[in-house]
Image (tube, rainbow, N blue to C red; front, side):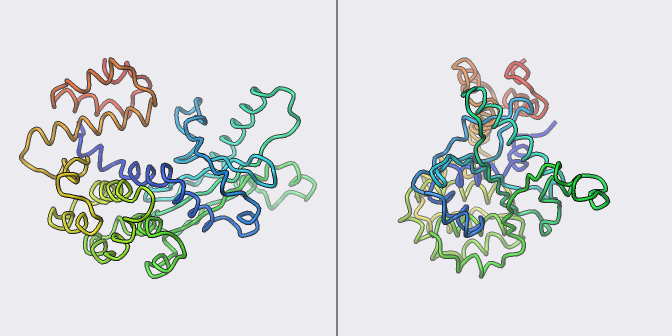
Length: 327
């Protein structure tokens, strides 16, 4: 049976996803870095709006992506989807997934406005920190068997859905440091790119200037806490002293740092720390999976013992409903 620590380590992208989705400035800068310049130029970035809660792939029981945004482009609504590819290998079927989600979005548009004669533009983006450079089909057409054997007239009927990729594995740390974006965005991208490095603690300490400058960014303190949670969740070898040093650079006071999930989890030997860490983890995971939680579920988690919390966490991977978790 997996422990809360196992489950937490297995989903380290949750913290970094929240950084990118909840902070519009970072999301905007990532889109502007990764999308073609011609597309960036025609989008009104002042209209960028987080629509993640509105677009759920109910058939698959998951979100369209880690972040779903709408923005005005040439006076029309465009859907911008941001998916973090945090797995060790690339997803061969990513183009198909984006195609499927786009169709679901268009179906929703038609249901909401049966009289409409057009669909909105959808621009999918993958931000990858997979171990190897991105090398899988980026177009639905490339997934069709024997596509090169068909005449041009047959190719015209194939779906043309494709997606954009920002591959952090082909970008050096120096390239990321030199990007003309906010300190918080550079920190987020550096953390993603280096999260599997054995020297991640040492590297993060070397970003002292960025940690300090990020304090002045909107939501800088919250961003720092999420990045610390991401680093400690994904790489358990970071020492408490190193975390404390990074926290000092980021302006995170020790008592505040201990209030975040990652830091509570590091307080070995404290039963209350383990229990509270499991409690916070379970609530975050339940909200990520089922979104709005009833008061009874929150009450159950709040008053559960550590062993019971572990049992519920172990059921999350296969649970389809809240009842499956708390059965």
